[in-house]
Image (cartoon, rainbow, N blue to C red; front, side, top):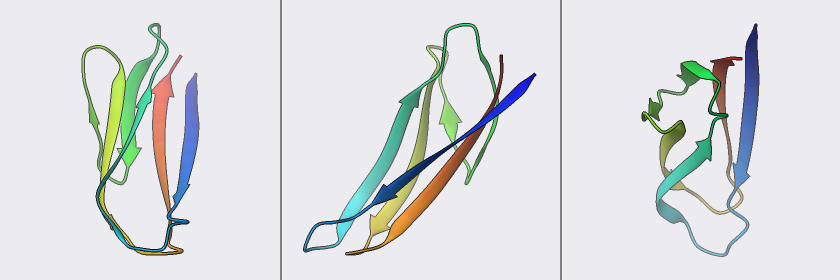
Length: 68
């Protein structure tokens, strides 16, 4: 059964952040299906979204769909 999870990140600092990446681990028994926006997943189950720049007060959402 597919499971969708979403992560929200917000820059609450006083300057823009550059080179932002969001990384999360999947359960060992899960199979990565896809992510929004584009995402990379390695053999160890680590999923990484490259966000780039995040301006002050800006929020981004990233989503992954896995099979458990």
